[in-house]
Image (cartoon, rainbow, N blue to C red; front, side):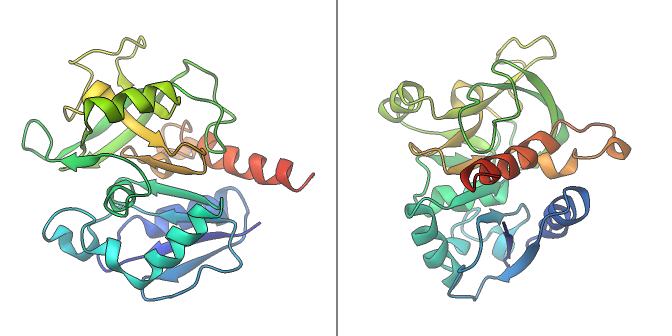
Length: 234
């Protein structure tokens, strides 16, 4: 199996993702420059966090038109695994690989801290190693993480079990007080209907080793590896 980490002008979490995949999990991985027109040979594509193109216009709006995104779009539509983290999530929304949109945080301030998430769906390639209802701690760092969608879209997300993570408090209560950015229904991460595309605002790559104080994010990357191993009959 092979991971590809896309690098846009302004990406700043690409090296973090590469470190987790290659050094922590020992899996082959390569960077993919945003001008590349192909993602052939990869099993997983990661769109990392950062400030692609300086977040001009709005977060992810310009990156969505990078040449590589045409290839990522086709890759995802063919069933390939795509993970978008923070700015990567914003790009997936702009590319319409996931429904909804991002707005500025309700506080209108950049938010950088650890938050608690409740795992809502364990039946995706990204969440296999979590338990349903499990409470995990993962850091966030964003100014536009306020996920928004129409009532009809929210209904579909719930009906299709597309909500992967929700913001909650330490005891698992999903409350307004535990919502760091104002996201509708406390949504922290969603997947597409087929489950092969996941977007999330929190940074699992920043909590994948004990030395960082928490390993809750490591399970997400291990889930991807486990899914691919099962797919190949390993």
